[in-house]
Image (cartoon, rainbow, N blue to C red; front, side, top):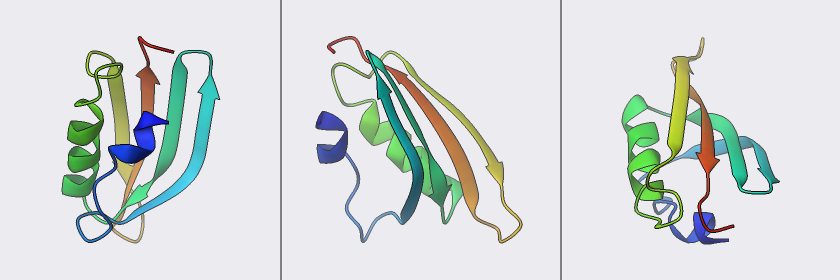
Length: 79
């Protein structure tokens, strides 16, 4: 899956993925990151994927322990 090859390296971002769902051309990823910048980095890297670049939707919120919870919806054009 091209999603995995475009994740930033471990020393650049700390992710805790709680859900990964692939249903046809729709991919959903839920999890937490240490900072909002890490979520922005993740989205920027995923938008480099030809199949994803036009349709990556992000919603996010702060958690009680100052982490950033996110939900990404990707409508892949090539699946």
